[in-house]
Length: 160
View 1 (cartoon, helix red, strand yellow):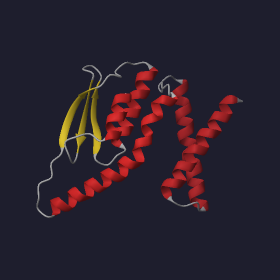
View 2: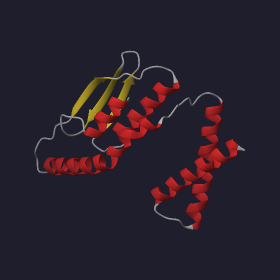
View 3: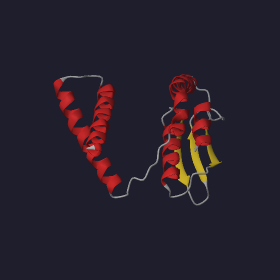
View 4: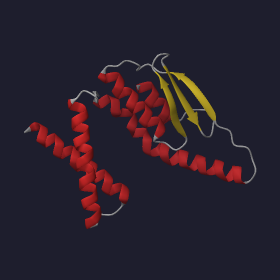
């Protein structure tokens, strides 16, 4: 019974996210979203039952998410300004950073912290994760504009 409830909750969340992303609740979008959400939920359930998906999420791991909306707005403006400068013929400089990164284990907590750090850095428009080197305990980040990581990126990496 509990598994069915969790399946339905996951399906409803995925359907909701899909409908938000497409910006429409027409009948055809509802059907497509329902089928896609069911397929993704089945794949997630299968991967969890086979041990392929081993994550352990704690509420404190989600704390850096509070910085994401502001960071997206700020970095979108920053990147737009850099694009205008570049179109005007001025140089715009980014940086590639190699930083120490602690969650390199194979346990569910480390996997969750890695996934959240990668998500948190990559969801904002100015930076993305190129590689996580679990052997060396490093993360490689490409920042398109500027020389310092945003507060959002720093928080996700600190939490990681």
